[in-house]
Image (tube, rainbow, N blue to C red; front, side, top):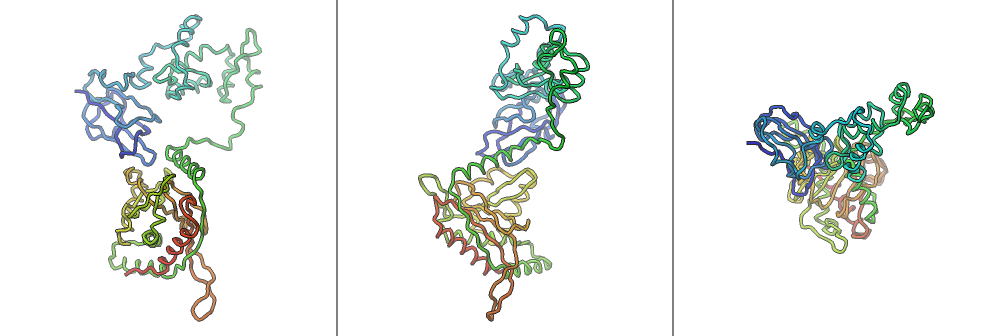
Amino acid sequence: MAEAVIMPRQGQSVESCIFSEWFVQKGEKVNKGDLLFSYETDKAAFEQEAPADGILLATFAEEGDEIPVLDVIAVIGAEGESIEGFLPRGSAPSSETTEEKAPEIHASSVGKEESSTTVAAQQVSTAVSGAGISPRAKNLANKASISIDGITGSGPEGRIIERDVQSAITSQPKATPLARAIAAEENIALPSKGSGAGGKILAADVKQMPSVTLADDFTDKKISNIRKIIAQNMYESLANTAQLTLHTSADARKMMAARKAVKAKMAEGYAYNITINDMVTYATVKALMNNPEINIHFMGDSIRSFSNVHLGFAVDTPRGLMVPTIKNANHLTIEGLSANAKELANACQKGNLDPEKMQGATFTMTNLGGFGIEMFTPVLNPPQAGILGVNTITQQPAQLEGGIFGFIPKIGLSLSFDHRALDGAPAARFLQDIKNEIEKITIE
């Protein structure tokens, strides 16, 4: 009996996923547990296994498609088995399948004005639907040096398919073989009308057109789904909040001594690689508990206060910035905090973090100290009212014991806060408290 393959739900907050690729092609045999396809959310990438043995009878998704969770995207069953009951929302299978069943429109069969009028009446504007173009149609358009601008699609939801491009090719004005060759080589579209007899396009008409590509010193790369989300979030954060940043630095001598002690203990079998960042994180959590007015969400017409600290921290990954959350961080020892942070960061790097673990942060930290950054302005993650930027350790002048002056290592701290929710004084006290916690930290 045929079985539907659905787009999985990755967390309660995820409503749709971006389809990436099929590992098995339509008509091929698949065994339960084989990798079937990959997809991504705005936070992570995933691979899905086949739910049953059989033949991949139909697919309803292509690369780049945004698919609502729990929607049917494929059918697995016995060869020749009907898939009629599995078609999503009453549509036909994927555009490739639709193209195979659609009648091909060749130059020899087009020429009657009424025929092209009928096709045009049946087409749906791609510009309105934004459904895009199928790979086969795109390849044909590139091969024929024809622009897809102005082509309307007759595929599912207005998608441009192969027969649409074929129809556009046949409706093009006549051109000499040399003119077409020049257009293909220069990667430009043919003009609508040429200077030859009956409007025929000549080589001179193509050469006179400005090249679409003015230089070869740049490339365009489509941004990822994660990058789109980051860009939108950053824009909205700066546009919709009153952000202000305070800067200070903390004496890092005790913290550096503690790090040295950790390395010595690890040589003797100590299991926790507690880093400088872990120590700053621990100090920040303690300061948040001492300053509960910072551990809040600004809701516009109200302030939501939290009794526990759910700490978000920025992780740089090949796919973009990710911010997992350490829940109930105030109940963890420094060892537990370090272990949790490393586990979440590793999951981010592998791209398999549960999206639910990137929700619910009450405060966020971001560390650019490893890049030698001495001061920066971190951007808030609304509705949180604060974010701490951790900078590099530098040698700074200070008065030492005995009244003499010298240089000591100091770590920079940058606190951005939402001035709608917090005044400068409580924000400054909180930053000062983080500094004090750092300066007294020790490892037993």
